Amino acid sequence: MRFPLANSLAGRALLILVVGLMISHAIGFTIYSLDRHEVVASTEAADFAERIAGVIALLRKIPPQWREDVVRGSDSRVFRVSLDAHPAVTELPSEENVTAEVGTFLQQQLPDWDPERIRVSLRRHSAPAQSLAAASTARIGFAGPAGAGTSEGSDFLHASLRLDDGDWLNFVGPLPQMQSNLPQSAGVYVFSVAAGVGLVALWLVFRVTAPLSALAAAADRFGKTIRAEPLPENGPAEVAQASRALNDMQRRLCRLIDNRTLMLAAISHDLRTPVTLLRLRAELMSDTAEQQKVLATLDEMESMIAAALDFTKGAFSEEPLRHVDVAALLQSLCDDLADSGAPIELTPQRQVLYLCRRVALKRALSNLIDNAVKYGGVARVRIDERPEAIVVTVEDDGPGVPPEHLEHIFAPFYRVDASRSKGTGGIGLGLTIAQAIVEGHGGDIHVENGSVRGLVVRVSLPR
Image (cartoon, rainbow, N blue to C red; front, side, top):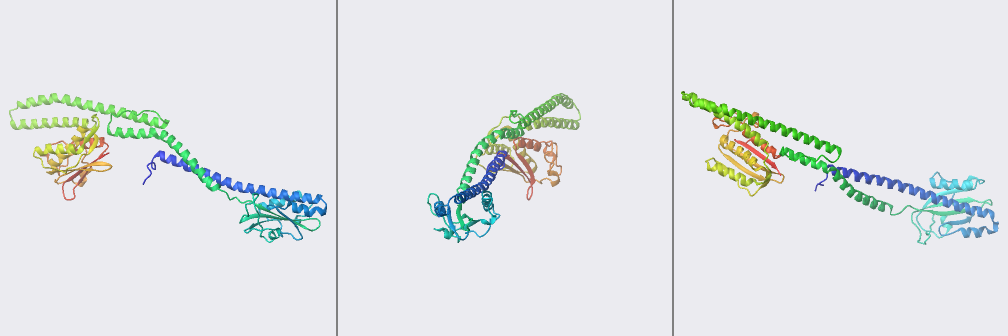
């Protein structure tokens, strides 16, 4: 199932905001986790070194006979201390951060000691131990402060320091592992913040992009009727500017169409007077043959003037939109033509409601059916209801149209002489008017030759 906002500006802005927020928080938590591990390790190492330095300072100030008591008193389940003849650590401090920090700190506290007397190492142990003797064999364990038992796979700091009398003071202490619920809590936090911010951002983005949606809807209405309501010129500066430009264009187009309609109406009115005078003079002509020619020419002139005015009125009709049963409209058209003897075949269809200008759409469909009867001998009409559109198909059995003429068939006053008889009448505006009306509804009209013969006209009216 496709996400409804996937291709919208609001959806993409929301996606960029939420994904960016999640990535930034994830990076922040990663940096925090790494820094936290280093800080805790460094702090524990410093504490370990301070405790060692404290024990050494105490041993250097007390009499030798008290040394064993101080060592036993310093030994605990967590911080192990023993006085042995051999060192538990045989290597010098490595280059690792923790051991280097411990070694450096001890060297600073004991500046008069030879560095070879201080040895520190970091070891990993996997089994508990009960004595420091086990620690010297790399098997040492510890219980936490609360006595929760030993920790498997923990890191332990080992330190061995040689006293002035040659004995070795061995220390073992745990280095806490960063095993916590931080990844889970971080994930919950990031997704909770993303959800909360996403809801707020969704509301804000829709408020910002609402004028764009209104602009798109107004442009769609403007494509269907030139007299659509002007757009409110508000919202973001860019949207308000686009709305003003669209309103200005609408006003200019309306003015242009009104001027053209007035011009055609004036021409029609002015021509009727001389046409009427010519018709009266033709009636007085003694030559009957010439009289008929003149009257036919005058009839053709009147037809052309009327058709031009009809084209202008039909293409830019101000008829209000209303819901119409297109199936019933086609049925009435076909019944009227069938009553006059025209061969009509209509495929019955249930009610198909469509928001349109009824008179204009009726005229467009009537022109198509009339053309099929006049030039193709028969009209077969079918209506198909689809989820995205209503499709009306009109077929005939005529000779069709040469392929090179198909792209020009909707041009005003265009006639295909090879396939249309001049005796059928008409001046070549029927298809032009039908196309203007269909496109005024936001639809599309397509003409093609049939698979065997005849012409197929398909009208697609979007829902």
